[in-house]
Length: 309
Figure 1 (tube, rainbow, N blue to C red):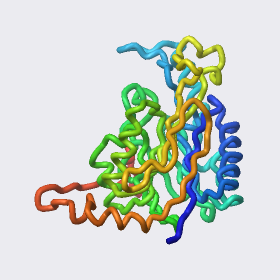
Figure 2 (cartoon, rainbow, N blue to C red; figure 1 turned 60 degrees about the vertical axis):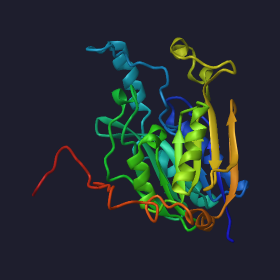
Figure 3 (cartoon, rainbow, N blue to C red; figure 1 turned 135 degrees about the vertical axis):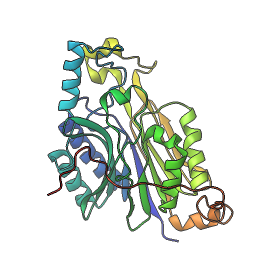
Figure 4 (cartoon, helix red, strand yellow; figure 1 turned 90 degrees about the horizontal axis):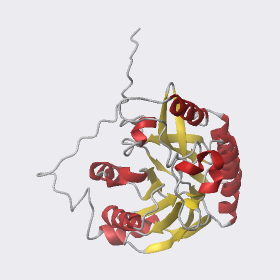
């Protein structure tokens, strides 16, 4: 058997400072490599910040000027995938020979997306996934991804894909990832509820895959006094308390979960071990019923404007 060390990195943003957060990520890649990791999975919305508790001045039917200012500050912290922050992380990935999955707030035109960037140590940015369905009030500040950003990559130690936060409750998206042959299922999130652990174990069992759930752990005081009134930390002072975990294809928890601190969790995995469990369940193979159920996935980009010339 050929095992690989993988890591989930539980950390938080430097709020609204993507350059400083990128430098933090680069340092944590080095620390994960020191632990032997060839893969490091970082949480949702790490670069650019998850704006938990902020309302952006949007009561139903109107927007306030203060809310517009708040959004402008948030948008200024977003990044482009060809920007300096991704380059800095790619340099660290190459230096330490670590494949990196990192959550960012991506700016494209006048719209922000909650995106997971996939960075190879050899080839740099090899793909990205834009969150298809922002949850609740996230739809106020984030656009909707389309089917063109659902990549699964062959890393050399397993086929890797990403599903972000509550997208993991979308059965057809999960089925799509299983059909693409995902073996290392990355689930960056900010969901720190106890119930998230059941979700991670369910997906591991359903997909017969290794699930790497990486959650933010960030203290409310990291945001400074300006935002204190909008935030509701727990008793330990955390606005988002973590809950990162690594689960094997039989549902066994291999590492974590951990709460109320930053942490790098590691586990030894061998994707060949999945065969022992697809033996009796394969969601897109012998346990599927294509005579009864079918799924069509449209992977074409959906630009709002096309130029023919």
